[in-house]
Image 1 (cartoon, one colour):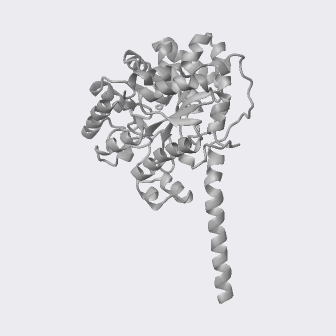
Image 2: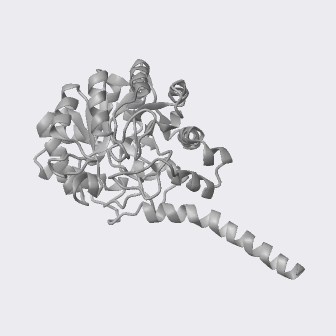
Image 3: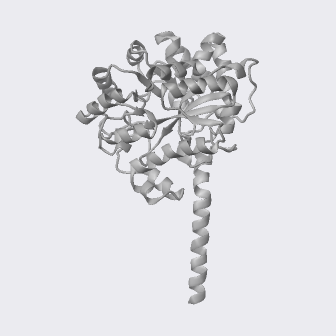
Length: 384
């Protein structure tokens, strides 16, 4: 019996070690694949583009050491530097329902808690959406601390201006900002908005893949609009200069935001229904309204957004948005590391430049699309 118990105990330990050592990385590798491997050819002037930026990346979810170069996933600091990427917005995924789809999801399951358990996060991260979201905020600060000065976190107009000036002297310098994908980490308490503001969050998507206490999701069970507390949230976000992100919002939520909010808006990662008709994407009327408000539309790289799997599909959607609401109001919103197979990782950004050229954009327009518009949007709308 003792021998059996000893063998059984050793087996349990071995299984646990294998599970915690390999399962999180396996999930990262299997969910965030690419179909094309670099290196990718760059245009002669590519590395002189002054500010390349992207509005949406979920790399903080995967507990990956972003200071190191990886041969899986989509974004890390060495690959940002290789791609001449100045600024990446890192978005916080805090809760994802089981059986996730773009049609209809209940809110009564939570895959991220299980992922945090597998990643050996502290128990608070298993059970509290707020705690796990704040941990991801801290992870970005930790990246900056461990980067030996190669990466910094931007939270204000002053910090962004200083970063732009410093990067003219050091083109390898990179920066990140924080966004929330869904307001559920506020845990139904408006005062938590101040907590996330202090943690550096500068845009918030009101809903992700399910309806929450604040707003309806395009993928929720009921797809309702802003709740009364959601209207309060929108007003307080405006007072703090936290930008509203309409990605994943229900049609009713988008309409309610247009009704109750006059401040800046962005859509961090999306497509357009005119070219790729599904409830994930924006209608022409919604594009027009965002354009009137001098907002910003981030065009994605995955198939549901652009009905294609390559840079050409993304470039076609960018052209549609630019033609409809103006060249100054469209940007990249990749959704890198968002548990999608992408055509390429961040080092494939030169492929987008090539396809934009084929769409007839000149260098000045391409520089705006590839990051100049994001730079200018946040120079206008971040807290001073």
